[in-house]
Length: 213
Image 1 (cartoon, rainbow, N blue to C red):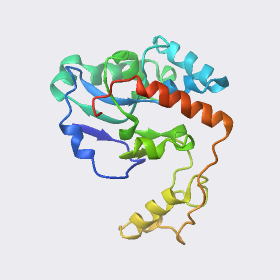
Image 2 (image 1 turned 45 degrees about the vertical axis):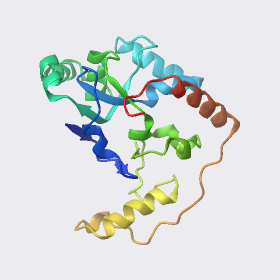
Image 3 (image 1 turned 90 degrees about the vertical axis):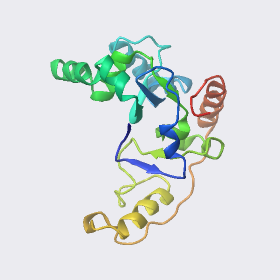
Image 4 (image 1 turned 135 degrees about the vertical axis):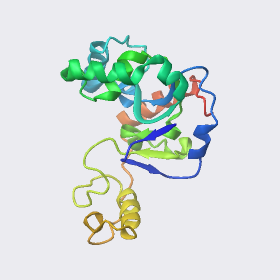
C-alpha cells in the first residue's frame, strides 16, 4: 500500500517501483524529513527541530521521517498496531503532535523504518540546494505555504505553479484554474549558506543506504 499527500507532484516515472521494494521486515518505508536533515544547516531552526524531536522521545541521531509518502506492508503494519496507537496518542495529547499523525508515528516507530531516498520525497529546503539535478526526484513535495496552486501568493519557481495550472486547465475544477499561465521565473540563487548546506547534505546522503538505490 502506498500513501501519498495531495501536495505532491509526480515529476517523472518511477512511482510503480514502490511496490517492488523489500522493506526488510519493517512496517513502512519513508524518506527523511527536513526536521531531521536541517541539522546539517544549523542555526536557530535546526535547534528548534532538535528540541522538537526530543519532545517526541527521539534521540538526535534517530531518523525522523516525512509521512507524505509512505510504502506500507499491511501485514506488518497491522501486526505492529501503529494506526490505532498513533491515533490514541494524538487524541490523548494533540498539543504534543503539531504534525499530527506524522509525529505520532515517529514517536512510535523511533527510526525503525526502511529509508527511501529524497528522490521519492523531494521537499522543503531541498528546492533551495541545487541538488535537484543530482537527485533526479520522482516525487516533489510542496510542504510549505503557499502551495504552487496558490498562483497569486506563490513565491517559488514558476515552473511548479505552471505545472499545476496546466493540469487543472483540463480538469473539472474551475476554482483551481489559473487566470493566466504563471510566468516561469528564475531558480533561487545558491548563497554561501545554502551551498554549505547542500555540501553537507550531499556528503551525508552518500553515507546512507536507501532501499531504492
